[in-house]
Amino acid sequence: MNIYVRLRDYDLFKYLDDSEMAEIMPLCESRLLASGDWLNPAETMAIVILQEGKMERISNKGKPLGELSAGEIDLEAGIFCDFSLPYRLLAATEVRLLLFPYTALDSGLKPEIMAKLQAAINDCLCLKTVRLTHLGADDDSSS
Image (cartoon, rainbow, N blue to C red; front, side, top):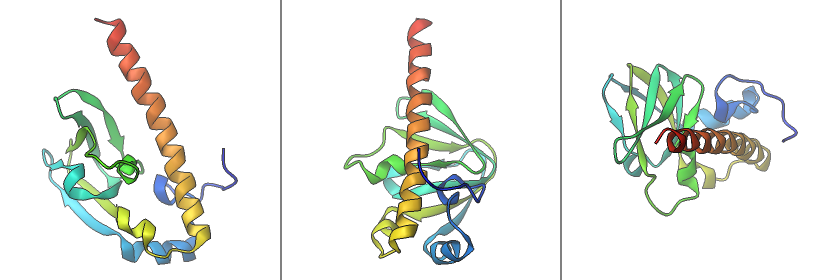
């Protein structure tokens, strides 16, 4: 649990006010992907913020691991890993997204902004862990 109130739809920025968003947005890269395009975590090196469309998480072995909908983030675990994440993202539809580079977290952001971003990342990682754990349990029981 954290002490912040949700102000925005996008999960990574949900606790940021307008002035904080003005500091963050110049650090982001906007990108469009066509349906069927892949996003590789090793090449992206950024948190993905899906603005429009749907994406699918696909393991490196081809197993579906869930979907990403508008407002959600992904690849945030890459901040903590010194190895490539074991999945890629597939654009299930045409998508519009923002990339927030991992290096932006070391770019001298104000402590309050960093605390809010870290709280949002923690929220997302907790939810993702629960989803992936339950997905794995469901797969094991059907074998």
